[in-house]
Length: 77
Image (cartoon, rainbow, N blue to C red; front, side, top):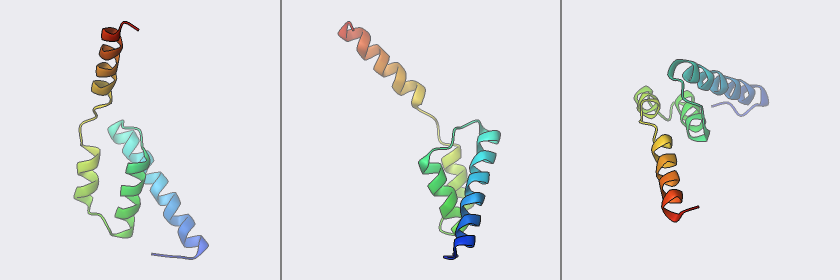
């Protein structure tokens, strides 16, 4: 872990590049949790398996939106 400004810049750039590669490969939009996990991986605090598990986790956004829409229909709004 580097605390000099140049080292921190490199860590940030590497994190951004990895998040963009994950987006290109998986199609998932990077969020704060993904950025944090990638940072932890690059620092050696998370394993490759942790990153793969996070990326392969099912996306429930569509389910949540459908449930919210159904609730609004039931409320008649």
